[in-house]
Image (cartoon, rainbow over all chains, first blue to last red):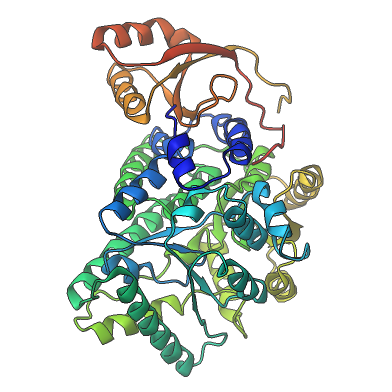
Length: 425
Length: 91
């Protein structure tokens, strides 16, 4: 129960408003996470991270800054953390998953902007999230129109560097992305005062690949008949991956997986044997957005995989570790990141193929395609996704939601009806 | 599923800082107990950070470990168990 008020004050945070967020977190976390039975003991670490969410990690980042490191705040799975870590910097995801921050964003953004963008802008401008205060530089990207304009607003308050992500996947687009990574590398070198070398970039590639390996290992357990860990817990781990220290995160996640190995051997699963298995696809679920997983699982179903940025898009495909030159490594980074299938690309058949593949790999009984309100890209793509899944005989429910609590009842009704339609096993 | 909150009591161990909490968590686990790291309930503190949640039937043994190991804590508090998965109140 540490008192971080001095640290928050030093970060020029609005303590009174921030206090309101501190007030709701324990109960929400309790209802969603602590109400589960038979959780793996290793989840204690992630409970710890959430409990100290605005304390321990921010304090670590500030200590690193005192030692000369620069902190880069990122918003998207296309931004290559490897470059930042290679230069002795620290990349941290910036959280935009709470309704708490949305009104702050709406002061400067149209109401019809997606809640993720509104929350991210609100967290900065309202001075209510330490991570947003600590980051020396924000790294944006051109994944949607709302974000592109939001960077301009944020840039009036904090240094923002924007990576220009190609919107197609032709060979020349991968070349363009490699050039963008090169430009980013130069900016990171300027910011940190450190050179990116083949040695430190190789080490950073391995560091982040190891995090991906740990997450892939975790997700493999969810492919089993009765997974030894809930979808909610897996989501929490995925969310924490964005801002925890990568070495510690990898170590703790592998330790959890060792426990899960044992649970599998002992025949311990967390679901009823007849639980329907659901794949969630669509827009990201930034921390602390736990609503959909919680509703699905409290209705007796299992969320077995997320085709989302807070899911497989974050860890699938490793960066080639065999490259020895800086150019070769940058090319390898470009190729790996261009394999992510986001709705900002056209065409984006790869995402539909991913969903169909994941349905098989994770034995999903149905897909819930989730769209954050006002995300035009995923909303429009939903038509193609849902049509393709229906043609393949895969039951699919399209949902739109935001960060508020108001639609929870309606979501329960619709998801409950979908699960009923899937029938019993 | 029962939609009423469970009403049995839950005990919370409070700390000055997370290091003390993690140390006691390890000690209790080594003693075969099952503490759960949780965000400190708002009713118990205006500050953020971890507490350890202890079921009533492990309270006596927990106190014994604290005394034997001279673990540093801020205090022990009790609240009615109030975990309601159907409350639908999110952050």
